[in-house]
Image (cartoon, rainbow, N blue to C red; front, side, top):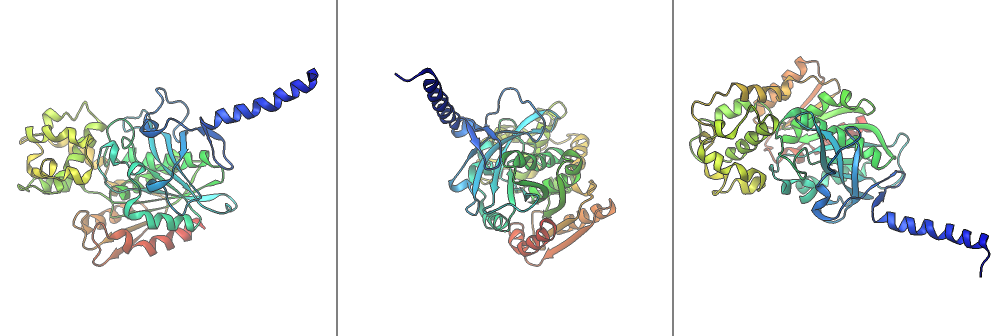
Length: 396
């Protein structure tokens, strides 16, 4: 029988191994980072704790991912849940992905590109952390190969419980910013320098991140904003759409806008007062279907934009809400790259012209590039070389 000292030593050697084995099922240990809760498997990961403690930007949980939602050029890909602040000023959990480059981090850590995705829908199933990066994967992988960490927010209410406040600027800007703070908590080799880049809905979000980011996350260093075909002039688009009496894809955007303002202020915006019976009947589908399915004839694609708002509805408060989230009104103190395709039939070039004029009037330094023949979906590819050069100038 071993002596007491030997027995005690054996226990000490045994217990740490048992503890680590148990902890591995509950924690993710990122290289050069602190252990963080791994969270439950499957879609339960997206359900946050009942009480959110800490500060905005704090990492709630993370788990390593592979497959279609992972970026192939990354050393590691993570699904994350992090804390932000909701459209109504309350703590909220937001989901997304963080991808870490291969190789050794430079002095000061890997800079971060916070990617803001374009419109996918308003339902949780439409979150890019569930569906993958899609057509922009090549560009995101290119950024990893260039030595940037890539953070991809889903935005508030996509993936996680609760409605998605579509094109509500403050919420989107905070989501894009806070995931950068979370990336630094996930892996300490991630640095403080970051840029916001986004297209369409994401171009709008990136501009609002440029407006709120420096004061919202002062420990980070925002070096610039790249907005591709940013959503803007929503009030004007709604007015134009109200004259369209045949079914149109614009009705899908209308459905997301309506759901977004209701999410932002349900006391002011009530479906029963705003919407026609046909639109009210379809409203639940915003939380059930993604963009393409919303455009089908049995959904919002089957009604005309003119059939969304009730005749006689007082649009004053609605238009005020749209104006408050118009990016041409924001003040951005870091360099801005604006990119626009000349054949865009969704975000009209003259709207982006006006956004650029507004940003410049408010003191921003804007480099504005247009791409002949590029449509709304083509602007990312057409502008890729300019985006990559612009990022390299600021993140190297």
